[in-house]
Amino acid sequence: MAADNSFITNLKENFRRGDIVTRLLYINIGVFLVVTLVNIVLTLFNQPAGFWTNYLEFPAWWERFIRQPWSLFTYMFMHAGILHILFNMLWLYWFGRLFLQFFSAKHLRGLYVLGGIVGGLMYMLAYNLFPYFAGAVYSSYLLGASASVLAIVIAVGVREPNYPIQLMFVGTVKLKQVAIFMLLLDLLFMTSGNAGGHIAHLGGALAGWWFAAELGSPNAQEYLNKVRQRAYTSEDEDGSLTLSSNYREVTATKDNIMNERMLEFAFEGQRYWDLLRQGVEYAASQIATNTSVTSGGNPDNVTIKESDIVKKQGLSQIPNNQITLSNGVLKQNEGWN
Image: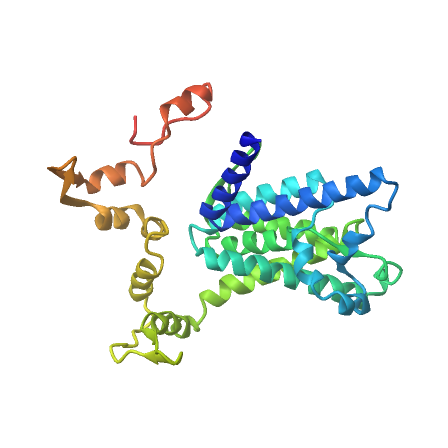
């Protein structure tokens, strides 16, 4: 019993301390396990196991949707089987982590929901608009995180199209190539057995494109103003909000936006990657320092050389034990040998 309590406590603690990607993984996996266990119990008692999940899945028929509007949100946490959730969660983990190098946790949470909503609405629109789906519209339901995940993939691809990633059996490819490949697959299989899923993917992709494009649009000035105004706004005793007289609008230049990101995302691990995206040499010039610290109560000096950062290309050291365990598959990053 003590071991069980410890396991549950660890799960709760990992969820509480985890980032947004970890929490989304926990929620999806938790929902899948609960749904699966309930269906197993119903099956053991010779009861229909799938009928109740229809209330959590998104219906193609718009009249059914009116009777269960919550399904536009719940469907994006439902999965049809172990392989379905496995691949969705792998993509969410890989690209969610990559997304957080360029955007914030709030952005990822919002885009996950937005991608799911747009994907669901495009699915319902297609099934009610095109005669091809007339025979299936009344009995079709959508489930899965695919639209949400593809929104994240496309957003990262639009933000950093030439970012290189390693794919097993393929090698190094650019993010834009992955995004284009996924879009082509969905377009080519729009009339397949999983037509609804592919249409929802396209909706999620549209949401991801809009999200990334909008952040780089002329509205940047408006967004920068809102972020800065929030920081300079205080709440009075009566609950009213007051903008400080110290607030000054700054032009949405690259330098000002980067400086605001440094303040807005303090202690979230974003600054290092923001600097690296400006080039290793620039990052090295900003990170290099020579400062006095206290170590064990004794004064000490820490020096971070610009030349060392450039030599290592901003990469961290791979633990030597991991290189050993990989039987030579992993190679130490440049500059750490």
